[in-house]
Amino acid sequence: MQATLGSEYVSFVSALEKEPPVSIRLNPQKGLHSTATYSAVPWTERGLYIPQRPVFALDPRWHAGAYYVQEASSMFLEQAWKTIAGSLDAKPVVLDLCAAPGGKSTHLASLLPQGSLLVSNEVIRSRAQILTENSTKWGRGNIIVTNSDPQDFGDLESFFDVIVIDAPCSGEGMFRKDPDAVKEWSEANIQLCAERQHRILADVWNALKPDGFLIYSTCTYNANENEQVLQWLTENYEVKGVEVVVPDQWNITVSSTRDINGYRFYPHQTEGEGLFMAVLQKTEGQERSFRKPKKPTWLKAPRKEVEIVSGWIQERDDWEWLRWQEKMVILPAGMYDHAEQLAQHTRIVYAGVDVAEIIRDQTNPLPALALFDDMNPRHFAVEEVDLEKALRFLKKEDIALETGKGWKLIVYQNIPLGWVKQIGHRANNYFPNEWRLRMDWREVEKLLTNPITFLEI
Ligand SMILES: C[S@@+](CC[C@H](N)C(=O)[O-])C[C@H]1O[C@@H](n2cnc3c(N)ncnc32)[C@H](O)[C@@H]1O
Image 1: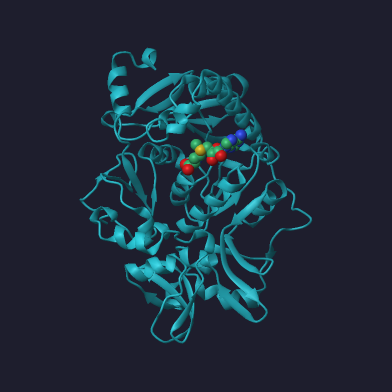
Image 2 (image 1 turned 180 degrees about the vertical axis):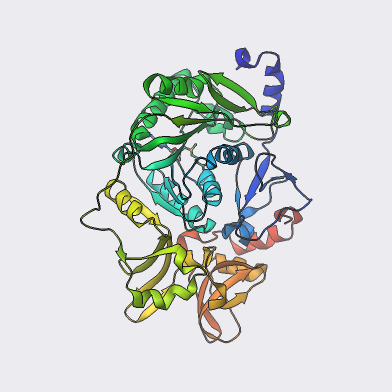
């Protein structure tokens, strides 16, 4: 680093000794707006710096996907996306290959035009579950979560318009946030990471369409895992660099290797952690059409069943209505064939939105529907709750409500959280057990008396 940064090395080291900044990205679909209290992250429309870390777990809006806690430099993805968006199909199919826990995927889900499809993949099974939870809570309905090895995508020739690879790396840019990254650092590990990055790129290259875009990023500084990986790519495949316009005042360092620009974020220059990002365009390959699989994974939902639940969604024609076992599932309209192709080659963990469960003559709403931003709240009885009731709901306690009967949507500050089924004064709580708030109530009460617990938006 000393050799790379020269006289700036001292400021770089002293920046590493400071507390990392905390930042969030607002979900444009869930109604929270930035206020003058917090300063904006310059390279995104919805990023905010939060001077003191609040207790996010005690904010029901965080559980509901109204914002995502994300390191600020990573939000530069929005600039990369804006650079290529004009050259893409109206409804692109995008792969986020190394996606858990879902920072870049939730961001992409919001940036993609209506009707597009995002495939968010995570190779580690437990991390794919966290990715599913965060994608579901974000509520765009345009994500299919897969749990596959990058190799599995290789057979989907020319399938994706854009592939995002936020590669596993040596994590030098996370040193002040994650002490384990420091412990694991070694020259040998950098070499291993670089080899793995080559392998990942080679595995999925076939799946990118001709003229399609690759967004490559890491959270490390060394050139072996960044510029040199891209140099290797240019030596083995037909590809060209794409320039992202960055104003000088953002203090992003631009490196250039063989006409490919790399955008480098250093903690002494930008408020955020270390990040490297580059955008490339594939200039080889052929378009391909796919044969319909003989045995489909999803069935088209019968019209009669769609009639029962279609009023639960605001724009029913924007969606493909499908059955998967006893579930009614929706995917963006026109993406059924893509989903079926994907199912032939990858392990799908979650797709679109689980709208309802159909058991004999009963049709019950599912948790993902409550969090889905195209859900139609006018169709349901709504129960607006205060902070205490919202937190008790998120702890999966049965909460007391005024009398009533049947399904009720629990809403906090206009943001839906989930479902209860009411019988008299008792309401059974249908919040998913695996998502529940695990904090002891005495601890909750103590924290609620501390003003820094809360986000001021
Ligand atoms: C930098 S993290 C991704 C962060 C994520 N993009 C986000 O914004 O929240 C890299 C991810 O790659 C996954 N990974 C590890 N080894 C991998 C491999 N051989 N192939 C693909 N992904 C891998 C890790 O489990 C990890 O979730």
